Image 1 (tube, rainbow over the protein chains, first blue to last red):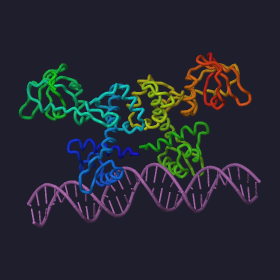
Image 2 (cartoon, rainbow over the protein chains, first blue to last red):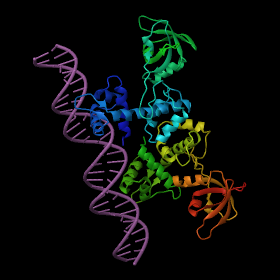
Image 3 (cartoon, chains in turn purple, brown, orange, cyan):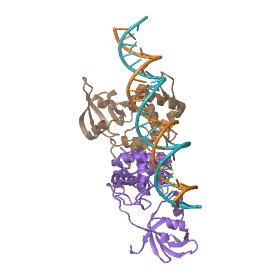
Image 4 (cartoon, chains in turn blue, green, purple, cyan):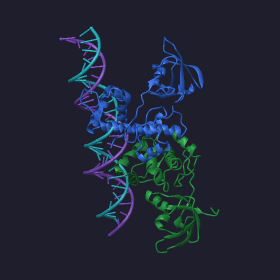
Amino acid sequence: MISETEENYLKALFVLSIDKGEVNISELSKQLEVKIPTANSMMKRLTEKELVIYESYKPVKLSAKGKKEAALIIRKHRLTEMFLVEKMGFGWEEVHLIAEQIEHIRSSAFFEKMDELLGHPNVDPHGSPIPDINGKITTEHYLRLSDHKKGDKVEFMAVSHSSEDLLKFLNSKELVLGTVLFIESIEPFDGTMSVSYDKRQNEMLSSKVCDKLLVRGAEGNS
Amino acid sequence: MISETEENYLKALFVLSIDKGEVNISELSKQLEVKIPTANSMMKRLTEKELVIYESYKPVKLSAKGKKEAALIIRKHRLTEMFLVEKMGFGWEEVHLIAEQIEHIRSSAFFEKMDELLGHPNVDPHGSPIPDINGKITTEHYLRLSDHKKGDKVEFMAVSHSSEDLLKFLNSKELVLGTVLFIESIEPFDGTMSVSYDKRQNEMLSSKVCDKLLVRGAEGNS
DNA sequence: TTTATTTGTTAGCTTAGTCTAACTTATTAT
DNA sequence: ATAATAAGTTAGACTAAGCTAACAAATAAA
């Protein structure tokens, strides 16, 4: 049996190890807002349970088992977010904290019912992929809006590391997933972009915003 | 801040104190499946928090504050049960365990959204009343089917202390809330009733079942 | 390359919530 | 009314999850 706390550690390890495949204990403790010795002792417990691979003074890795468990928790989180938005009428900026709690509910029937009612979605309201029931995750590799150049036409597919503030900002600009953006110009000094889309013309987006918007080329060129 | 465990104690105290207004520690510990000293020490903590009124060797009472908190947890539980049945398609026999977990979610927006989507229901899928947002509860006082006599015509309004087995039994007899029952006969020896209703004629219901079915006189006579 | 800094480890304390064993107070039955 | 039983209390131990303080190892800087 994996406790709620342990589940939170697995989830944090999963997201933090996406690029390098491993995580420092200090990063982990920062992410979970606990002190380093706390995270350290948890790593020992998770090693006992064969959910992580860890040796003294080395970075931590998730085991295959740990990776699967983590993906299943993320599945529950993202299904919940989707359910809250699609079936209950919450805004995409409101659902994170509620889903953080509901993801720990122990009832596969509950989440499979959500999945069914939602028609087996493959992304959550922020465009992040929903792992399947076996913990398999199919990641589309999008580029950041800030990686594109003047004249490019791209489709807004996902938000990376979305904060509530960013999502509220996007709301205020009527920028929803699926919007096709045309890059009118880019300010050379600070990277601010001027973009046009169906709802708005020449909206200014700071480079900080452009870094968070994940897009793919529009007009069929994947 | 009231912990999840404390919430469970409050809820148990609430349901156990409905008749006498007070609860023995041994009853409480049986209900929560903990040992007596565990319940005892929790009563001390809840006394500190002014949620219960308790003196050594005397039965425990909920304070006004404790009663309100308990009612609000029960509100969340029953709203959740209703949501699971009405909006997610679960059977009334499947929802208790899931609702036991969801009732502890900390988000009033979440439960108020449920309430709204359900159209502010006043009973849960088993006919139990849903306390309002201030913890006020309006209890209809129904009689047991077993308190009625041959020839009576009554409406099935609620199930008391429903177990999964009882609910499955009622499913098998197509007995749903709102069904009007006509008492054809009562076996004097063991109290078994023969009842007829739209879907079935002369169904036999044991006295154990009849004790659990809460009804009110049909044909307008409240 | 030696020192300084950051990162990780160990030891020991804390709180919530549980337990058992031993004891005390109430209640019930003879 | 006293003994037997049931109910409640106290003391002390345990686990999970957190903390601080002191120390060790690894990394970065001089």
